[in-house]
Length: 246
Ligand SMILES: [Zn+2]
Image 1 (cartoon, rainbow, N blue to C red):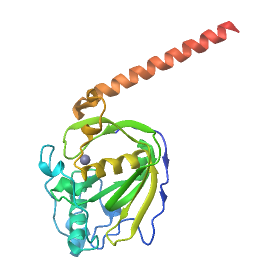
Image 2 (image 1 turned 30 degrees about the vertical axis):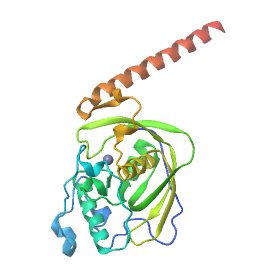
Image 3 (image 1 turned 90 degrees about the horizontal axis):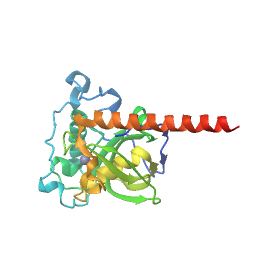
Image 4 (image 1 turned 60 degrees about the horizontal axis):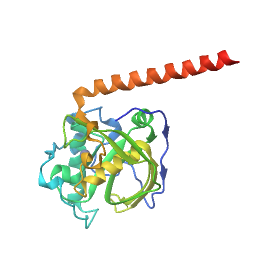
């Protein structure tokens, strides 16, 4: 996704419980090396290898509406979230929705580390398991940025999303989550929750010339730099003309 400038803290209205890595048997995210699961010696008795197969665009599970999770605190939901975390770290990815691992339930996981939030502009997101989510765009402002998806490997799309978002749901303990966020954090949540309604990011695109292979991103970056150079040259020319008139 396109780099941007600043990061802000999310407003967290969570009621009744911790919102960060709250999974009882889940590995501590701070100990996870970038891009990979932990070696067994760090996991101790928690070690279990459960990298799930990721559904790719065209599989029916990605097109259907997922069902509500009846009991967010059920052990099998904990196991699902645990396995999804392992799968997301292995991929690696920023977020993952249960239908992407062939489970048609309304559960997503995501995280936006502060370093990424700073690069991509927007709020940091702690590792979050969001169950039965409800999304509420706070205004009409939209912004376009690059997205990828583990179900569309190798592709990138320039996707418009709501900039300001409130989202609610519950975590694995059944405690409510209620956050007001913006920028990349808001984008990730919209992307992941779209999966619960059978929507993939190309369906949100308004201009499919922005759907490209990741390997060709360098051309778009070069174009953007050339446009920026032209814009700066035009500004310099304007400034020079203004100075000449004085
Ligand atoms: Zn996706």
